[in-house]
Length: 77
Image (cartoon, rainbow, N blue to C red; front, side, top):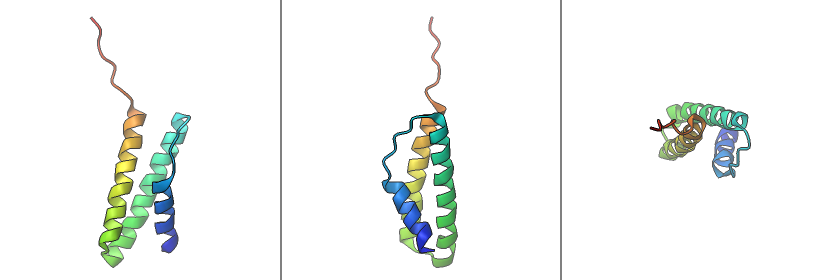
């Protein structure tokens, strides 16, 4: 149990500098896995701190996914 929380906090505090798209994909998947693991703990304990942790991880995951999708191409006239 504690290792899941420790992994999530370590992931949250990690400095992200993705060199490749593959790195971003792996980080997004890791974030998703951590969120799901913390969610299982939250279901058992109903601790607000776990919910806050999940929310922070979700924000990080969304930023990574936004970067993965890139900017839309704009039509030039």
